[in-house]
Length: 176
Image (cartoon, rainbow, N blue to C red; front, side, top):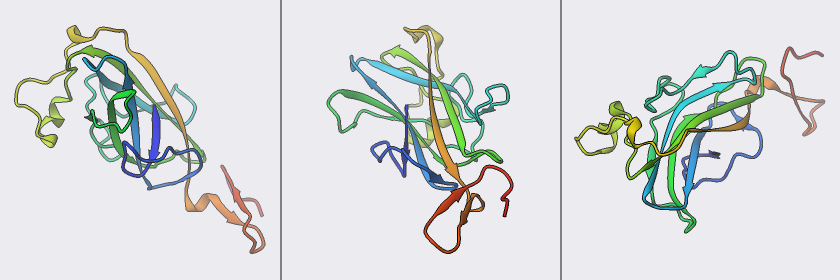
């Protein structure tokens, strides 16, 4: 799983702090036999405490928090001969109160031929009218859980010390 800055799926990886509200892309890549497909589902986000997650997608891969992320899309135009499929979804960088770290996790299933899409999303991308509901019978492997950590800051998290270019990040109340 990769988290990219901007509109991917071929954008640069987010390897440093990201400002809240920045357009981001969550990307899952598949290598190997091009006859296989991937199904991204059961995505959650949390602040490091998995006991209180925010559920982003359901078991079919349908987005439940449409204000946080867009629907999953797929492309075989990967720009890399070793990668035969990319699944990706756009989102705006968000954070939890008093936390810099945001954790994103999804279950990834492998299917022979086509896994299908969320039925609610098929019209958005001009997909075929036949039933594309996720079918567990096509799943050829147990789902794998992928996770990634993202560090997000809000303008209120940044304080400048005595006019120089030093930046101090806070995760609680600012003490002066």
